[in-house]
Length: 302
Image (cartoon, rainbow, N blue to C red):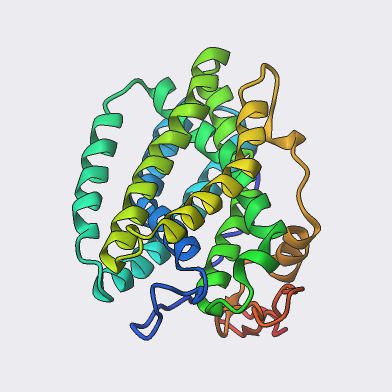
């Protein structure tokens, strides 16, 4: 019997809430940027349950105790992510965009079809998407001063938290794929498949919201939106390219110091007194101070 190993990946239940007083243009002077990320958020409650189902099935083929431990930790983290995104998406629909429900129906059908593919195809999709997110994380973290300055801190902090944890579990889907299935060409295709499967409906959702606002028909607004998409792709495309190379692993990608500091600030499964909010009024946007409360298992108070 394999020795049980505990993963270093932490399941953090961060109490983000999104009351209806949050404006969907949570970056007031950059609504196109806000809607790009609003659109991507819409995909998460469909993508992430798919990642969980696929990982759970794939782990049945895995014997390595370290891969198993990280795989189950991945499932726990993704479970937290999609629930928070669902709350955020509900706020968007309540605040003027009920039409987003139509795109949600499309995504539900898409992932139902994808779930009928072979396990290798499904795990490669998961591994490919997770590899791409490292570029998205770099864009979010390194460009935070440009992207989130004077943004609603509740939304900016929520996205930063999510991308920090994407970095923390960056190896899980890749390791599980290699252990359960393996195969270079399927994995390489999965990078493109996983990226497009999320990016395209996210862009459709963003365009829908911009049309509802009347901004899509302004050439200045449309140009701004395309510039934000191009800026995003500038960061993501090198990661996509490297991820498709033979022998590449997510381990070879260096983590930013800001991400490392965030993870050090919240190192274990303690209970937060409140959601950690980044100060978006300052360009530096340091890692927020974490405030914990004592729990029944007698965690220390920080």
